[in-house]
Image 1 (spheres, rainbow, N blue to C red):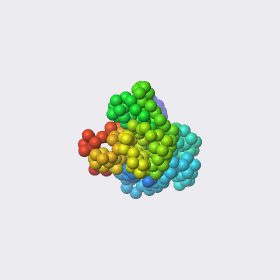
Image 2 (image 1 turned 30 degrees about the horizontal axis):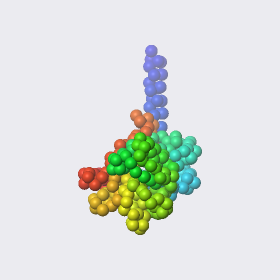
Image 3 (image 1 turned 90 degrees about the vertical axis):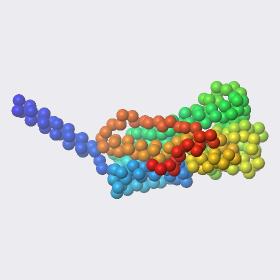
Image 4 (image 1 turned 135 degrees about the horizontal axis):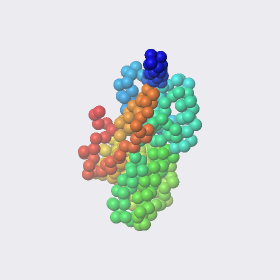
Length: 312
């Protein structure tokens, strides 16, 4: 009996040692986002930094902008691998082509935590329910137009979040035969400049526009600027983000941007880091993908909205 007992104790000790060997300290993090110039990604980085420093105040954090360039992001991941980071926080710029880079990082023993958009094979993912965001932003359009009108969708880089938003939007429009989609394939680059350029071209092509769905707030702001430059006030815009600029636009009562499906980039990215850290510790999260529900922000409820800059 003593031999069996000793064997059992030895096995238990070995198991404990193996578990502790799997756990790693959080010393360094690499963050790659779509576009650092977008306030959304500034908020995500702040969320990651705050959660990471709660774990290790001395953690080294490197943030880089992929500028929606797949090759650039792959190169950034290679650099993180070479630097031996513990976790890569990834905002993938391509919904599928990033997969080999993710696998390469994991093969090097690095945890990959995706946020805002999915990345094939990532250990954990936290993002807005983007299908729902597209649905509620475009349901607002349908309701305001009483189910009839000419609409435009300003598309963007083909990350999973943008694909899902357009999917959700179209699913709503398709339920209403009176809604006519004039354009849905123009890439506004998810930026103010891109939204301006695309909207200028679309307003030159189409004289009769009733509403526009922009895939994010910067695109919407650019589209509104194009409308002002061309003295077009015959349509309104909805978007996704709930960014501070949109809060201000809704409060003025003079903007043609009328609604935005909100996201919480700070909470989203911070939660992704927390889940990634659990994986680093050898734990398996209850859910490897978490979807956060959006809220439609309009002039009617914007004063109750706790946005990106709210105290945490």
